[in-house]
Image (cartoon, rainbow, N blue to C red; front, side, top):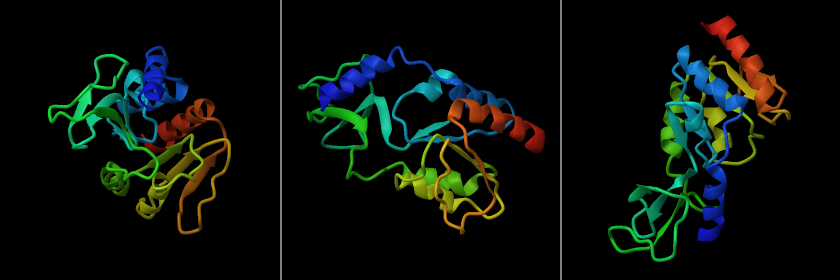
Amino acid sequence: MLDFYNERRKQGLTAQPNEAHLILAELEQYFDVQIITQNVDNLHEKAGSGQVLHLHGELYQSRSTKDPNLVYQMDGWELKLGDKCELGSQLRPNIVWFGEDVPMMEPALALTEEADIFVVVGTSLVVYPAAGLVYYVRPRVPIFVVDPNTPDIDGSVKNVTFITEKATTGMKRLKETLLKDYV
């Protein structure tokens, strides 16, 4: 497992944010943008976003196998067998693996419940628990979903606008709408 994530980190060093990441960062000039991401990369931060909550952990962090609250920023891309935390236990990637709890879910719910505008970008809304966030948006708060496929959202979620385009082009349309209607 260490090798898998070492390769992801090594590749991530050269990865660059796309237009959607850049637009989200740009919108901070007009809105209090709070990003909740399922991605473990640091592309939102590279784009300039200041407030990013990583639901599933962060690729460039490690954590203790004994105490998950002991989290360390990594200096490089490699985590080796024998790299230990201050308690003497092996370090592992600070990534939520299948079957594990999502510790950042409660802060994500709190942000969702406070949102004045809620935007979902580039997800099918199939993977839970993150897909369930739309059900915590307050009534009458506009929800924008940017994805080439129209996700299946039940009728209890109101005020949804679908922009059925990929993130890079759909975010351009969304930016125009937000600046025209909400600034």
